[in-house]
Length: 313
Image 1 (cartoon, one colour):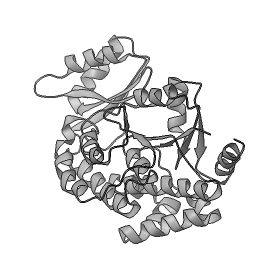
Image 2 (image 1 turned 90 degrees about the vertical axis):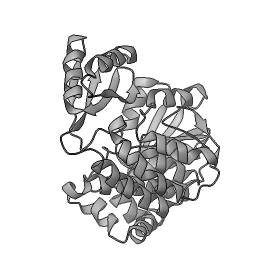
Image 3 (image 1 turned 60 degrees about the horizontal axis):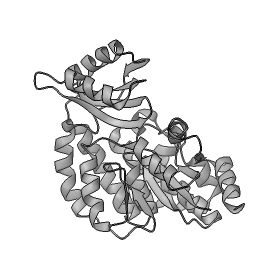
Image 4 (image 1 turned 180 degrees about the vertical axis):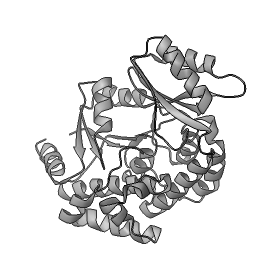
């Protein structure tokens, strides 16, 4: 079977993620043990038991999401040999995709994304920046709204191009709120400010980008076993020399998810698997291309179903 592997980003986390897989699959349990050793604290307990307010802290959420995703990937791989045609990850999920592809070391990635989370949280003082979802508007209209709302040295930009009629903007709080009002005037079916800790994928993340440069420089990179679609370009990358620059640029650039999923659809792949926690990417794919099936791999039942689907081909 020619299939793709997908990895969610921050926002899909929940207390209990990975616990059932760790209980039932040696590969998943060992992955969480490796994560605990790499970070020198019990990340596994935080994933399995919470508390939720700690899991929601960006510096914890980012390594937790990567650990849960790779635990699920390795557990399925232990059941059925995996040979993906393509991979992609939403924002933070790109690190998981590159780890699954063999480009990045799991322990090193956990340490890097923990620092990424800290830097992103500290890049913008609390309340200075925010994000908002604008539903029902096309990219051109959102671009016009952002240009109009960016005044007086305050900016708002498209941050997540998630799917048809689903775009998230980010920037200075007053500018984002101006964009919300303009979106409603332009016919947005739903325009809401999101409960996030920072304006991710916007120019306000500049300090985080600068801080991540030495962190990424220290990572060893190998050629990926399968092509990973970069968030920044929405193009398949197989060149290890481009991985670090793309991850660095990703911090302040928009996530081009709709275009990335269209690459998978155009490749002829109709089966994909979403590893880790939640079904956010499956929901987005239904908006982008209903011909592409997304199967979750997050617990015992979904992993068994995914293994059965792979073995049937």
